[in-house]
Image (cartoon, rainbow, N blue to C red; front, side, top):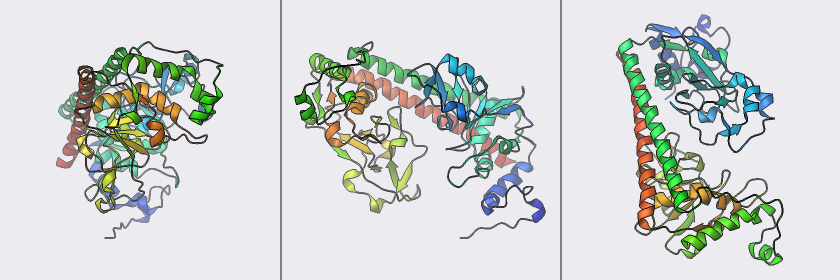
Length: 454
């Protein structure tokens, strides 16, 4: 059905926007509803709304393996900051970019990519920096950052932000646009309830991260690799026969550190290459560019959906069941690994995506759970295994991992009691993460219910 709006010339937004998209009926309905409530503009409730434009400077940053986290718009999720994939800078660089520091209690709003995601800077690292695509909102004393973030992530905040982006290739919003966003004035009782729920959700996320970190530490200790840091040697000698047998001539492949890790796993834990473990079935996924709606389709799991050893359900796409290849369907307990781009990110597929389809940018491993613990395998791949996968990947422009090279990875089969111990920690981490998402969603619903009842 065709939808349309009739807008009087005098009501056009000061001549800034003449595109029909901006005046869609659902956007106008949200504006009417919010205008009928006691409200303020975002500028009116804020001491400052800032974003440091470090476009030129960030091109010359020397990135580090650790140090001060540097986040971008993609790290601002719906309700929280994710440090997944964050890069690191030095104290010196942080000082140069001091205007773009993130401070405790600020509300962060993504201005590109997933435009409109809002999060609260809650229990952040002592130092944290960001790029120019994150707006930092500093509220006046009586206004709650949790209430604002919950509102911005709600349908009423999201619909306001979604009508703002400009640009035909990559959508982007600007600070001057955000200042006019309408924000309802919530009663103190509602704000207190939202604050409590929101903080509990963020605390559950902290618990989830702690449990996952404990699982990683426990596994590395069991493997004797917790403090195992073989040196990166500047020069080394490789036999011609090794070059011929591996069909590799790149120096990185023959870095002695990889050989030392493999030798330790084989010698101390009788690790075997996956190709010799015949109970593990290795396959790739299905290619698809045609998606459908959630209610008519099945989940299509891509590499971008993997996070912290599981599947992030927030941005899943769906494919028509009639187009699914039966052999590529997902099953709970399958372990998948990214094979292009960021090589070696692994996840255990949860019940939520069973019956969906694994993307062709993933490699799937399927094996009996009674033989091998899928949580344990995923954790190994996300720690030591990922380094070995990066080594095995090929390609000068874009690295790629295929089934044959994945089968070359050595996998230690630890006693079931040890597998179960680290698996329990990972499982508890996932449960805490799900609880966190439920609480953040509940805070958002409280906002929507209050608005809709008025």
